[in-house]
Length: 258
Ligand code: FE2
Image 1 (spheres, rainbow, N blue to C red):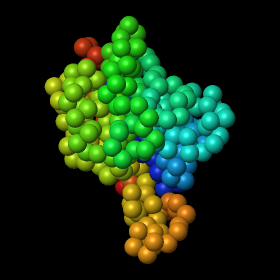
Image 2 (image 1 turned 120 degrees about the vertical axis):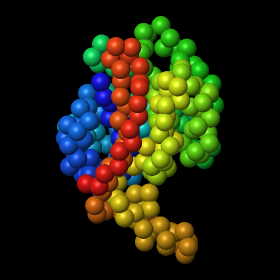
Image 3 (image 1 turned 90 degrees about the vertical axis):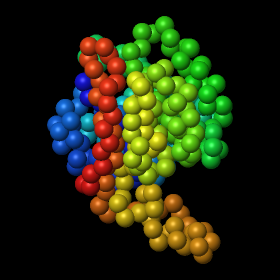
């Protein structure tokens, strides 16, 4: 079995890039299950019901989020409209499902989402305590494969997490920086990458408008949060699962232009 995980879908460019390439990726890699980080899908911050449904309709099965999970208010008032989504278990807003059990091809997957502590002010609970609690809470649920979207700024923190949970959490996928790293590997039985990268505008500053970022950073102009438009790229990984022993055996990195 093969699982596709797509990095942070950012604004319209990201959504369009995923929409135009997903069928191709699914066929090429014989994908059985598609998961995407959607915390930047609604104009760079958060998600709306409309966009959630749009992403479901183009073929994404489940969603992870991040520090911007609750940036759009309608998710707070209509959490029930986002049933196939995990929210970070250590976000200061404690809402939504902190893990989901996904049964597919006789394999039980536990999908969850955590915020790193470094540089993420929305992180409200120590990362490692939170992961330990989640593993304990789910230990009797017959989970075959744990998949963690680890949303964080620090490359080292993500690798420390993966090493500490080596062979206990089966998949640790970094998100948030929007820059794909080339360090995908198997740490024994744990698939790891520091950052999956984003699905968003190629010509951008991690998805944002270049000119606006320059005006803000160099000339200290007060700016809106404008998402770059134009041609998008799709970054992700494919996780290869051995159906017999129900373990992850490989991680392949993907980056294509739409
Ligand atoms: Fe983020």
